[in-house]
Figure (tube, rainbow, N blue to C red):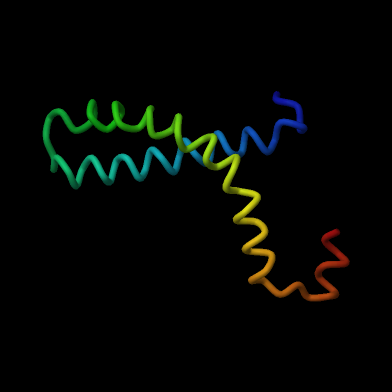
Length: 83
């Protein structure tokens, strides 16, 4: 098991991997259509996309959390129970 102190980085790795996999798959499918080379092209575009997505998630996630924090109202009873 991975130590809990790495949870943020592992979450970013998994999230960026899944999201880049889905987005690159859709983009590749739309660009090529269903062809025999689809899977190979998809994987070929996914891996470099993931290499960009992972550090991007590490940088963008704190900004997204601040934006969400500004948009979401905290109920006083709920915030006391959660923190």
